[in-house]
Amino acid sequence: MRYLGATGLLGGLPALGQIQYTDVQPDSVAVKDGLGLFFDLDQDGTEDFGVELFATTSYGINIDAAVVSAIDLYGGSGAAGQYVVTYAYSGYTSGTYAAAKLNAGVAVNSALDFEAELPMGARFAGTPIGFPWEGGATDGFLGLRLDVNGATHYGWARLDLSSDLDTVVLKDFAINLTPNAPISTGQTMSLVEDFERALSLNRSGNVVTLELRDPAINGTFEIMEPSGKLVSTGTLNPGLHQIGLPSSGVYLIRLNTPELVWTKKL
Ligand SMILES: [Ca+2]
Image 1 (cartoon, rainbow, N blue to C red):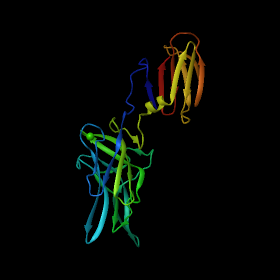
Image 2 (image 1 turned 45 degrees about the vertical axis):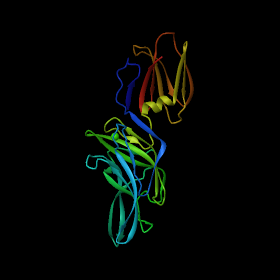
Image 3 (image 1 turned 30 degrees about the vertical axis):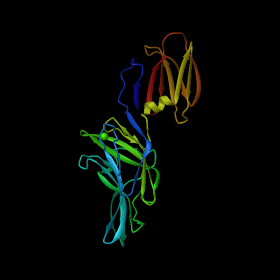
């Protein structure tokens, strides 16, 4: 539960996690054996990650590969990985880490494993070997961990990858500027910003009109005098609410949801 005193009357703003979102315009594209896609996750002027596509030959076999790397390979940054079994025979298995291809809405946090350099996909003589990004992706997410002066930040990048591993497109990325605070893949705003975007609140005379446009938001509302004395309370549902006030004086409205408590002066 987070407590937010938006009026200042109920205390300062706690750190809710500030999301810094970057829409890549136009989309950045890299092709096999070309320059990789490099991007500056926290927009501080230094590139942090790269995705490179290349072809090579080993023992006469053509290998196509897509690899994600932290540019500072030894600094604690990396991409979220998953263990992939590449060989299994009669009870014996072996494998390696590869970059996870995450769907939207997956939490990127300390529960994931991060590696500084991971294959996304590889094809040996044209045959995929079982890494997550083989077969390509549309709006696939990399989970990212960025070390900024010793502090850990979590982020994501959204990519399209062609099934032949020949072309990769970077669409957008985001980072939580609060150290150690999680981010969800695809998340572009903080919890409070999401909430406020789904809300309109107006007072006209002694009537407060409150509209909630997000069907996922449910909770309760309370209207108080500045002293904290409760004057009205009710259920917070999606849709339009009109709430009468006892007088023309100053009141506070507090919205309680499972995720946060949001308070504003009326
Ligand atoms: Ca950077």
